[in-house]
Image 1 (cartoon, rainbow, N blue to C red):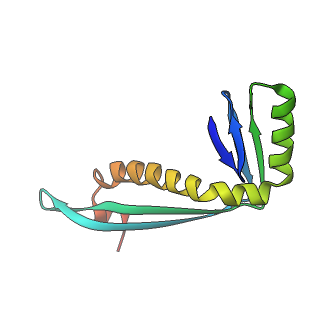
Image 2 (image 1 turned 135 degrees about the horizontal axis):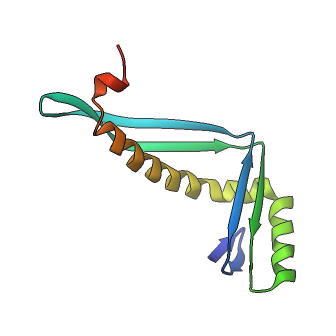
Length: 119
C-alpha cells in the first residue's frame, strides 16, 4: 500500500481490516430494460452505494515496515476515524458500486425482468 490519508504519507505491505459498525448503507440502482430472445431483462448502467457507519475500526499491518510506527498510525487512524473515513468513503463507495454492478448484471442478464420485479 502506498498513498496519503489526511496529507500523511502511508506505505507498507500487509493485511488490512476496515470494520464498519452499525452501518446504514444505501443502494441506488440505475438500469434499463433490454430484450433477448423476446424476453425482457435488466441491465444496470450505474450502481451507487453510500455508507453511514456509527463507528469504524481500522487496522493496517506493517505500515512503514516498522511496528512502532505502524501501531502509532493505527492508533491515530482509530482515534480520528470519522475524519479518516470521510476521506476514504468516496473511494470505497465507488469501488463497491463497480463490484456490485458487475455482480448484479450477471444475475439480471440471466433472470428475466418479470421474475425479479413482480407485478
